[in-house]
Length: 122
Image (tube, rainbow, N blue to C red; front, side):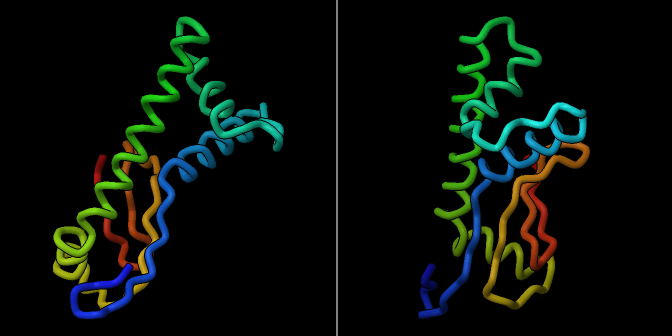
């Protein structure tokens, strides 16, 4: 991503991938690992089947969650230079140009930026 002052930023972000990887880890930790050839959509549906009343409800929850995470990612990307970057600089004093945003669950959902330790509660 190129900044207004011709500054280049190295930004890594894939919130849905982070969520899928977390779900796989939860299943692995519970003694029920998900096979490696299962698609991301199937992983999410398996997760939502834990509480859904039907396969259709699980599929709807999967779709809504993917849209939600992709929307958050788009918002971060769209507002990076105007809102996120100035806030990171102000709150953390991080001056680097590499940013790695990740979805995490730790006493609730958060998006963290790895290099600055910036945290956005979801």
